[in-house]
Image (tube, rainbow over all chains, first blue to last red):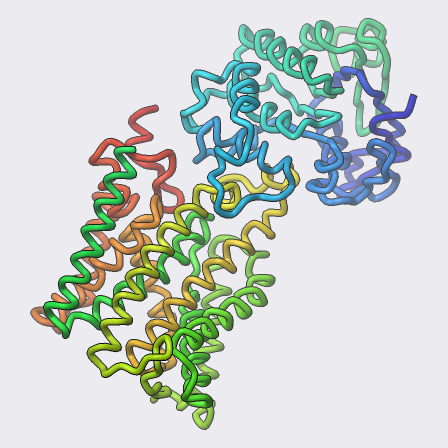
Length: 247
Length: 331
């Protein structure tokens, strides 16, 4: 099977600090990967390189068979790589519905100049997505008025509107009350399943990882220290000692 | 529907008032046309304000258009006024396209100051090249024909008044459509989140450049009309003070709806006329106090205040960095 995303010898240093070192990585269609690791291990840096936000000092990135190393984020996004952020990136002075409408309009590639935004996109698709992520009741409210958990959902929903082949979610449950994390993840996974989107999410909560991932990659000091099925990776000594602190 | 109806009513009432005043008191034609020109220019500045960018140099596009009108009218006196206006707008669009490539790379204070710096270079050049530009004395423009017809001064002003009024209404509708389109909403998205725009596959610079070009064209049109009604162009058309007046009007009127630009321009002109008649020595103070009152009472501008009062405030109706108090209260 061809890899959906693949990296080869990917490396990046900030001065003397090594954020990514010789990472060979691949993710296949249909996988649901959880990336774990302590703060500063290089998880977000790796995402930033793969999505074009940072340029590697060495190595290559291929997405869907195309070399995307050093490409601008918008060009990689157009190839089908969506992303949500640890701090949700929303249009705070737009309503929830407008945020999705702008995303849907962006997917078309060309923004209309005179046609009203709401009429240049498929209203049923917008309503369905709002329903899917549980934000239908808040569609007319400003994005800035949403609590953190719903901001995360909207952030993911905006990326989903692009119909990505791969969605990378950076800590989708951070800042969310622990009792709400499972509901949020269940909602997200339902949305991803419906659209058959391959996903990769960064997560610190072992329960979430065990429950929702089909594969886990453990990051330690800018390298992939372990990679495989959740039970196997979470039981490995290096992960228990360096990440979980249970060894 | 109710909100649209209110704004339509306001537009109709304002337009009729302009016409009646202009026809009943001929001396008022020029200030009304000038006020409408300021309103059109402010529409352009308001487009940038929606993107969270305040330009302190946009008057340069009015100046470029005005001087284009003057040069062409002096070189080919037989050219029709409408062609002169179109040529002026064309020149401002070309200038906006080129300057825009550089300035859209910057944000906030750097965007504002870079526009100011470029406008100051233009201002100085026009002042220094006396043999070409007439220096600070400017260039006179003989009254051209309009649609092939020759008019006396009074008739010329009446035609300009009606034409400018229709242009203002048409452009107000056009700008409002643009604000509500995908491009306009993406432009507003620059104010709050450029990163997300890029991760939606859009170029934030391209979105801003499109808006900048649009705004340059609007300010250019105002400059071409201004030059026609005054019959004179001077470097002051592109001075930083004039750019500041456009920003002043944009804040005064509010950027929540296109009509705010014209409300702001009307209040600005009225205050200036009143001050010129009764408070000659302190007109700047009167304008300053007006702006202070507006910022304190209605940070979203006059149009935002009106919409709030009618409890029909839209989702976004603030000046940069400010959220409608109504919205804050709702949440």
